[in-house]
Image 1 (cartoon, helix red, strand yellow):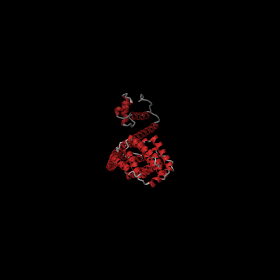
Image 2 (cartoon, helix red, strand yellow; image 1 turned 90 degrees about the vertical axis):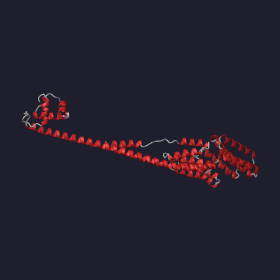
Image 3 (cartoon, helix red, strand yellow; image 1 turned 180 degrees about the horizontal axis):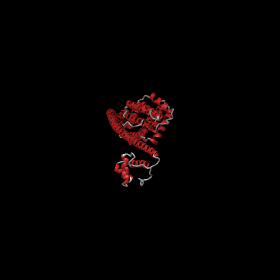
Image 4 (cartoon, helix red, strand yellow; image 1 turned 90 degrees about the horizontal axis):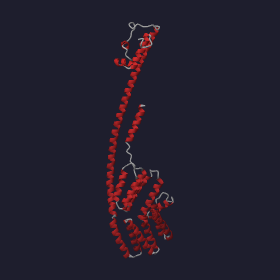
Length: 402
């Protein structure tokens, strides 16, 4: 019983050491999306780093956080950091129970990176692997980009009909789920219609894409569309138009200032890594202090239990000894009574104990058992035992006879 209580106490104290905190990865994703829309990448990065530094997120939640960080670097055209964080995301995601989904998402994101870097063979390899899965776990946004890339590669192979079909499929998904990403698809259609000499549709795609990019305040997509038009006119050897779009690109790029932002983000991340290390060290010291206090408290409680156990054990031993003495005395006196064949015993001739004589005198004074016990500072049970012995010795049956 003692050890059972001790175990219950340990469970209760251990539960106090758990400071549960519900982590909302969906909430983090929404916040990052909001700040990214306003180019507040420093704030986004701070939120992600704080989330990762907490140390209580699951592997899948950490995977999502690294994926979000990779997307920030991609927006800033820092592809080395994008790939690095995708690798970190994959490491965490493969420790979760969503391995297939993680692999597909990381492959999709890497294909987009290599496509932007114009390392088309690497991009195609990832796309081929994803196509075999039927894009089972991919989001609508990822499917938009994959169909857009596929359309681009078909266009390069001069399969213009199939290319337009893939791009139209991407547009349908974008209009339904991600209207703000339509400029990406329109950019590839600009190139397609330039190849097919349909300049009217080409310019219409530019205007429509620019309108949507400006509507959502997406400077990156504006820059992308201007770059597409500049390259189109350069390819057409219309250098005057190409120069005009180059000037527009320079102006927008200055506004976007991606290189500066990327440097600031990398510097911020280095600072946050230092802060994360200091935070972890502080947490470790706090945990050590807490467990020292908890251990001290547990030892104190154990000592109290041991003390109570020993006191109870001593009381039990004393009670057992007293019972044995009383029983032995009863047995001895009963044997003496039997030797007298039930005859009455003269008190002056029988060797009564001092305590028994005291009890007899108090009975003569008509005191009850409780009063006798209080007078002699003994328990009522002890008085009863002594009276039983006295009755047996004197061969009487009741108090009045005494």
